[in-house]
Length: 277
Image (cartoon, rainbow, N blue to C red):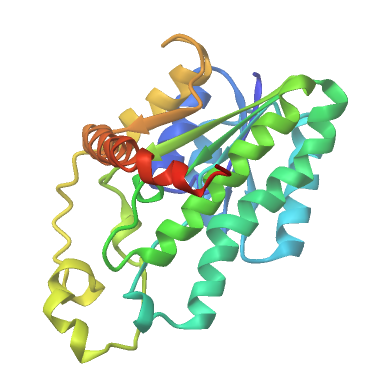
C-alpha cells in the first residue's frame, strides 16, 4: 500500500485524500486536468508527491497518465478514482453533448483508467481500487438524473469487477459521499443552457442559476480524505464494499434502502406470480 494514484487531487475530497496519504509517508501520483494546480502540493512534499496531467474526457490522456504513473512509482498499489463533476438539468432539458461528456468523465474515464492499471495489478496479484461515487448513485435526485445514472453505472461496473478480480488479490471499495464543502457546486458544476417552462416550478430545487451556493455543506473534505485513507489502511476494521461518507449520506442511504426493502417485501406475493406455476 505504498504507492498511490489519486485523480482529481487539486482540490476538495481528492486533495484531502492526497494530503492524508502523504502524511502516512506514501508516494502519491496526484493528477488534475491542469497540472499547474498541483504545483504547490508537489513542492510541499518533494520526493513523495508527483504531479501528472490527466483529463478523463480524453482517452489518450488516460493512457499517458497510467504509463507515466507506473514509470514514476514502479507500481500502483492503490488507485483512487476520485475525479468527476456534476450536471444540473431535468432529463428533458439535458443536452446530448453535455451528457456524453458527463458519462465520459464520471464513468468511462475512471473505468478506462482502471483497465489501464489492471494488468500491472494482476501481474503482482495485488492492488486496491477505491472509486468515489456519490449518494446520488443510491437514489436519482431531482434535476440530477444523468449524474446519478453515471455514478450508478460506475457502481454496478465496480461491483462486477470486484467479483472478477477478487481471486487475483485485487480488491475494490466504493465511496458514497454526501454534500461536501468543496468546489463541486461552483465552476465545475455543469448545467444545461436549455430550459423548459413547464419545469420552472421546480427550478429553485435543481437549476444551477437558482441555487445559492452558501458553502455550508456538512462534509469536510479533509476529514473525508483522512477517513478514506484510514479505512484503506484498516484502522476501522475490514474494508467495506461501500463506505458512506458524511452524516447526510448515511441518513439518506438508510432511508432509501429501508423504503426499497419494505416495498420488495410488500410486493413479493405479486412478484412470484411471474414464475412457472
